[in-house]
Image 1 (spheres, rainbow, N blue to C red):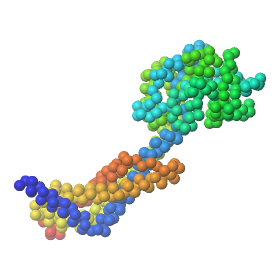
Image 2 (cartoon, rainbow, N blue to C red; image 1 turned 90 degrees about the vertical axis):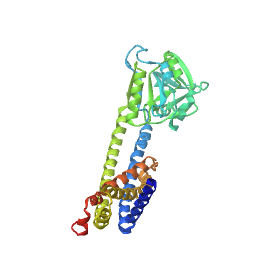
Image 3 (cartoon, rainbow, N blue to C red; image 1 turned 45 degrees about the vertical axis):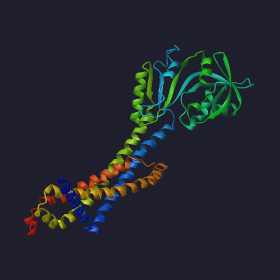
Length: 390
């Protein structure tokens, strides 16, 4: 008997909801339009905000290393104090806690000479032996050739190539501390940094020239992720390698954080303003609806309708309107964000799955909060309504 009564009450509840929604199609359309527009703008801005973090991370990563691992006494005259033990590379974490791959390169520096094969003239240069622990992007793929033990190849900076009139494939000799090593130019680096004036053979070649086998000068890391993720990774490295000086390259990590915080703050503020304006529009429409429904509410309460059930009707109606407006508007907003991302960043924004349910949930919340004028109807007294006093 109780189950039948509950089923009947449930059926009546949804029948009344359908009647309420269909009572004034014009006003219903206006409310849905306001909620849909708010959801669309909210979804577009939230998707841009989430995508901006990924975009900035990838853009700053393209600038090069953002973390350095160096000895504490880099200026010491003692070779062991001014370098790191190469065994550190065997214990090096190549993934962050979030599972992002880290691009790491170990270097050994010395001052030496370089000359073209068969020529007596030589040029004083910085020799930077390099060993890549991980090759994470296409820009570094040329350096992967250095990992081949049977190929005595090296990378030469464009300034050295231009000064000595060299080209890819030429044989050169590098000298240091009275020792000499031959190598073939595998590629020319021209990234606008210090490497443009250096010769980069394999790490073991530079170590042999300096008679410092098993030692490295520093490790350069390109750590992807947000500023917080990079800081967490640095903290873990400091715990793992207390004998080394692990420090971020501040102009990259701090610049990324400042830019993202500004963009995020601007978009969050805009989302808040849009939701507030949406709530005001819906509240104005709901006020008119409340004026029209006084007689309906009075009749419900006169025949025994409980106040909480009347309130539940209005909240269910507002939630359904928010759900419908959110589902349609959020989908349109995510599509809109793709075009906005292309206009702002030059590359279309990638749709983020998390943005859709968040936008719909915010729209439902705004709709429910905006139904405050309807909730006031629950306090009406039937007698006052029928006498025209309310």
